[in-house]
Image 1 (tube, rainbow, N blue to C red):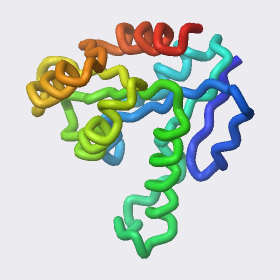
Image 2 (cartoon, rainbow, N blue to C red):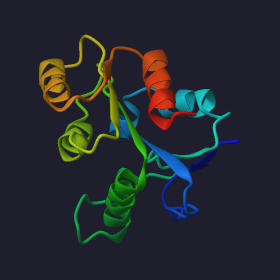
Image 3 (cartoon, rainbow, N blue to C red):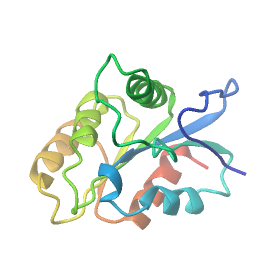
Image 4 (cartoon, rainbow, N blue to C red):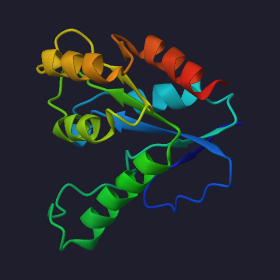
Length: 155
């Protein structure tokens, strides 16, 4: 019942349609395909899953505002984060995830976030403090993240 949108697909959501954004570790494939696991686990829900893990990402793209492909990716992500009813963030200990840290800072006060930060993540202490200060639910594994997202969406 869930449908998945990935960039560069337009963020066409119907009025009242609920959405969850999957923010978290990718790092050119260093992180495992956790987004696919979350997609499968939420497949029965009447939601749109906004997955920024672009199928045809080209690592040679210049990471510059003047590069239309790169800028389009970042704008898609920002628009998706704003549009989402829930933001599921996953910090894979095998990655640094600087963009996810940025997104946590941008949306910590939004009331939308649920964070998965397993022991071993290099900045777990920072994540714990931010989540604690702003009341963002913090879990240590993907099954708990999935359950927290379900609760946030009340599905």
